[in-house]
Structure formats: C-alpha cells, structure tokens
Picture 1 (tube, rainbow, N blue to C red):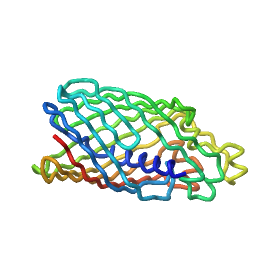
Picture 2 (picture 1 turned 90 degrees about the vertical axis):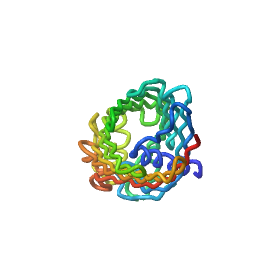
Picture 3 (picture 1 turned 30 degrees about the vertical axis):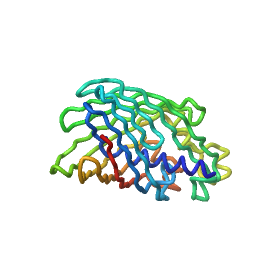
Length: 264
C-alpha cells in the first residue's frame, strides 16, 4: 500500500512538472539539476476529487553536447541528438491505473474493476526554434496494464519577461487507442451491475485538450522557483463516459510549485 501511494505521488508530480519548461543547463560544461516541490491533482483521470502531492525532478546534461537524461516523477527521457533545434530519444514511463483500494474515493467508481498500473516505453521528438517548442511523445504499454497506445502533441511559447522571470504558455492534446480508452472509461456489464452505472463502450479517440501557464523565477545561476498550472478538458468518449459524466468531471486541473537547484 505504501509503495503504491509513493508511485501515485511521483506520477502526478511528473504530470504537473511536464507543464512547465525544461531546465536549461550549460551544454558546454554539462550540469545536474534537482528539484522538489508540492502540487495538487485529481485522484485519477476523470475524477472530481483532488489530492495534494509532493513532486520530484532531476536532469543531467552531458558536457560533450546537448545530450541529456531527464527524470520527471515516473518518466525518464534520454535525448540522443546533439543539435541546436532538435531533440529525440527513447522514454519510459510508469502510468498509474485506477486502484479502488488506494486512488478512488468515489464510492460508486470503487465498485468497478480496478485498472492495473502500466509500464510504458516509447519515444519523443521535439523541435525548438527561438521561443517556440513543439513535441510529440508516443507511449506503448508493455506490462499488460491498460495494454494501450497513446500519442501526445504539445507546443509552447516562452516569454522572457526579465533576466530573472520568464512565462511559458502551452497547449497539448492526446490521442489514445481503444485499449487505453476502454481500460479507463468503459463500463462493462459486470461493472454496471456492481456500480449501477450504465454500460458504456469507449472507442479510440482524442482524449483531451489542455492549456497551461508556467512561470520561472531565477534567484541566481543555481536556484530557481517554478510555478505551473494546467487545465485539461476531457473530450469525446472520455468526456461522455459515465465514469466522468456521472461520477467525475470533464474539467481537470493541475497545479504545482517547485524549487530547483542546478549544479554546474
């Protein structure tokens, strides 16, 4: 039980932290950045119940170029391209399911079958041009959790307000296949009998549309403070599922604040 709660904390920390811009370290010298903070997030996707969570972060940049390894909660990314504008590499992610014994406070949804946690592997590809950044990330479950495949497309614009402050406006959307959508949004006949919710069959769809606002304040070359907030609107079958429409909320919010220390 304790281990599962720790994974929930790390998962939501990764989600909240991904809403704000990456930590920039000097590529010519390399560097290591570590961060810790607090956030607020839904109990599970589609939930209208929120929980406070700690957040963790780490990033190591190679002194030989733009290569880096980044840990954000339960997600690890490794950039294998030494380029001024492109990033590309593998990623691995541990995605929390919907455990009625841990993450579900709703007394109706908790009667439904649990969704097992998933270990996902995939890749990311990004383009950075001046203040603009665009990213595509693909995730495939390889652990018999939700068994699905997801692709997230995102973009952001960074505005340097001053030498100490910058603001980041972002947006994203995620497409998910039928296996993923079914795991989190279906109501099977068995679930319907146990919970009283109507039977529902979700198909492969665009899952959500999100917008985000982040801000970073740098005290000096070592210490910085990051604030982030995100609003996600569940759409299509994710919005219309009884799990969301009858027992949860299509409007999903995430907030976080983190202090980061960079070792040059």
